[in-house]
Length: 149
Image 1 (tube, helix red, strand yellow):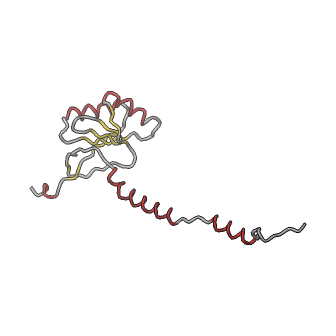
Image 2 (tube, rainbow, N blue to C red; image 1 turned 90 degrees about the vertical axis):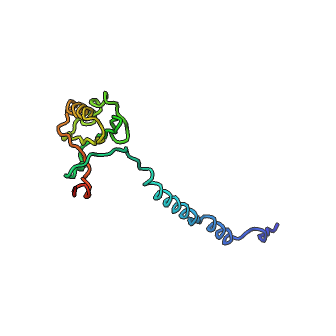
């Protein structure tokens, strides 16, 4: 009743096979990640789209501070807060909700230069009714060639 061990693999041979299977080759993963990084770096600036408006020009440069909300009014009279379009009838409620429990209530108005003055006054009136303390008007600096005239 002898037992033959010739057909069985040795213990050292089994360990070598197990160690080779547990290693993961990360080089293809790194290659794919670098390609995705380049794709996102190229396409990210193209995805940023703004609301096309022509700001009125002024000699003083005005830019909004970090605190406050920027309202953009396009040439066709649509009011935008960020990327969302707001109905002018709901603007007062939206401003009241936004500035609820905030210490400083500042709004910067960015209106197209071809917009009728009455629309700008109406939006400023709605903003004041919502309890906004300060309304700033954002303008574009005058071109150098326009100054020489």
